[in-house]
Image (tube, rainbow, N blue to C red; front, top):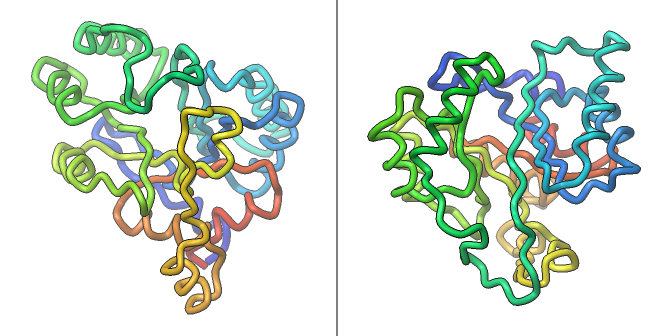
Length: 246
């Protein structure tokens, strides 16, 4: 299957909008590389871009998208941009799963997110790194249910109960870190590395289907009805990461 066909696949969200099943994660892409990466990704066929203030490259991402729009390579209505608020950076002593921003009234915050939609500033709204109870709290009182949950998900972290809950509620899941974030410990010492790309089961499938380990892992998530936002700055890997269905 060609890149065009793979990226042509969208999921219909519960608010009537649609989201590409495959997007580009931009975490840890250096600011001085971001414009080039974004314009290359547009040329390859990416139309979904995930960003956050925390990544420190949002200005450059916007510049790259602006270049592509002005050149006529893509129209704005073809693009799905996922943006998130910044968060306090964890330090060497932060424990995984520890709250680092203090207590937060998620229900009240969600009402403010709904106001963003009412004002026409966003088409779809969702949550990131929320657990099942937090999502339930929102669903019980919201007028606009979350369209998407973005969370870490891969073959070593399958979160089956959370996936089933969200899919039963009509909430689409987008998986960040579909490869287990190799190399992340260089930036976040609190993160424990996993070697999922070298897993023997994955490598057996690589040999059987003549694909890369990354393509196997992405196909696994897509077959579960989960969207993916793999991150890469390399043009070859960018292409491979959207050709796993060929």
